[in-house]
Structure formats: structure tokens, C-alpha cells
Image 1: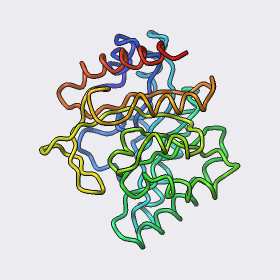
Image 2: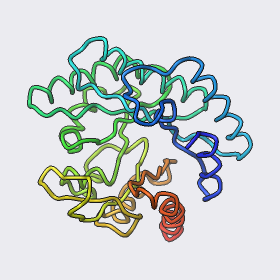
Image 3: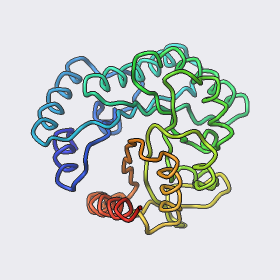
Image 4: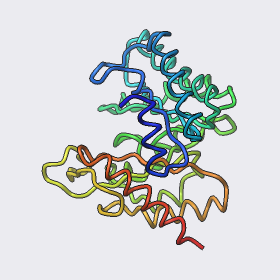
Length: 268
């Protein structure tokens, strides 16, 4: 879906704003081992700017799909440059945060190297007035301990947490406990999963899940969000809908906006 149509759809379903994914800058199925051309960027910015002005929506965050699980120095340079591109886009659209990843290694040595690379990159890049929100993504770096092992060395810098409620389920972590234990998030991702033997997602303990509409799965969304919002105590936070519903994605998004608004309106 082109960025202009995406923004129009977000406006139609009643969202307050959007999270820009760098996926919009690449053709479907293309390996993102390079940066988009300046021509692609210029067209994207122009189309997004026009749609945002027309709809009155804001950009809440920019999401970058970087990955430090590479040995090649040239590829690691590209992964850093992706984050810088996200920062540049966030500044362009006055977004407060850029969602970033660490990586998804498969060996113990890989875990340490990805952690060091992520810390090193975020330390260098988190000096530009935009919060780099590290997402709990992948089975390794979706545990509170692993997240803290990256966040704590970066304390005092412009690095925070993107708290993805559904991803904790895939790491077999209780999201409610994580909401109490981890630092306050800079960004929240909301999605749901249900047990599904034919599903595409496998947890660290081998449970198989498929995506579903908010509130219809086994992710403790309501309880986790209430803990996070209570701790935030009125501080502004973006709740970004991130669904894995396939062909049901459009209607599932309409349902998700309604579900979240009902949850928020029921809070004291």
C-alpha cells in the first residue's frame, strides 16, 4: 500500500497518527541490504507530506528494520545508516521516536556480538534529539534481562524501550510482569496472537501461534496496557497498532482502533 493511501486509511479508521515503516521505501520482497535512492526518498516524503497535511494526522514514530546479526562490515554500515535515515525522517515529520532492533542471533557468541554492536551503534546515533526506541523483538532480546543488558549501558542517552506486548508471548515471557519490571517505554506496540497449529509464529518453548484481532487471542493486552498506563501516570505515549492478521488486516485494524479507544475510555 503506498504511503498516501496508508495515511488516508489511518485517518478513515479514526487513528490519531501513524508510525512510518521503512518498508514503504522498498519494493515488496526486496532484501533491505541497501538504502533507498534519493529519488525514492524524495517521492516518499512528498507523498507523505501531502497526505498528512490533507488528513491532519501526525507521525508518532518511524520504524527502522535494522539488524546487527551480520559479520560483514559493509552490511553493518548499512544497518547503522538505516537508523540514521530513520532519525532524518523523524526530524522531517517531527516524530519523537525511531523504533530500532538489535538482531536475532542463533548462537551464544552471536548474542554477545549483536548486543555489543547494538549498544555501540545506539550510543553513537542517540545524540540527535530523537529517542531510539529499542523493541523487544526476537526470542533472544525479548526478555527483560536481555533488554536491560542493552538499555543499562545506554542510560542517560536518548535510548528507550519500544514495548511490544505481543512479542513477549513469543519469548514465553509474562508481559504483565515485564510491564512492571522494565523502564517506562518510549513507544508501545499492540498486537495479539492465538494458539494455532498451522500458525507461522513459534515461541521459544515451541508453542505455535497465529495473529488475530485485538482481544481475541491469549496476549494479556488489557492487563499489560493498564500496568503501563498506570506507571506512565498521564505522560503522553503512542499506542501503535501492529497486527499480523493477513487478509483480515483491514477489518482487524478498524476493530483494533475501536478496541483500544474502548479500553482507554474505560480507564478512570
